[in-house]
Image (cartoon, rainbow, N blue to C red; front, side, top):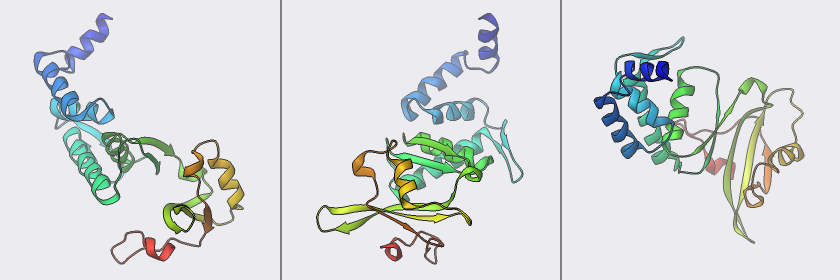
Length: 190
């Protein structure tokens, strides 16, 4: 116990400044993974946090970039607290930024290893429906050689999502359409 207290003091967490920052972070960020990053960014802004083959990020840089990504996810994609987000990426700095950003928004994060999936890409969108006004449609791009079918997708989703969250239509395509700006072209999918 004394060893732990010593380590917390050496990291400046149990100092008056560290305790002040901790209180400030919890009040402004809430209690989530992003709060830990913000605290580390306040206490050690220039210290290296992440190194991968593309970049080296300090705690300050990682916090700023994750905060900007969270803002973009909220403003551009409407991501809100309590929603489910799957992060399908290999281990690099982008994964860590996305993990902190999604945590900042209060969404539930699911990490997926893309090498283990039979799905290359997928999206779910609302489509007009006469009976209900709107129903969900899943559009999936399966990896080459995959034998994935709609029934397998439904079987996989059944224990994980509520009945109203189950896509009424599951469609397979060779690729997802994108606009000239690089955003998913939802109109082309309806």
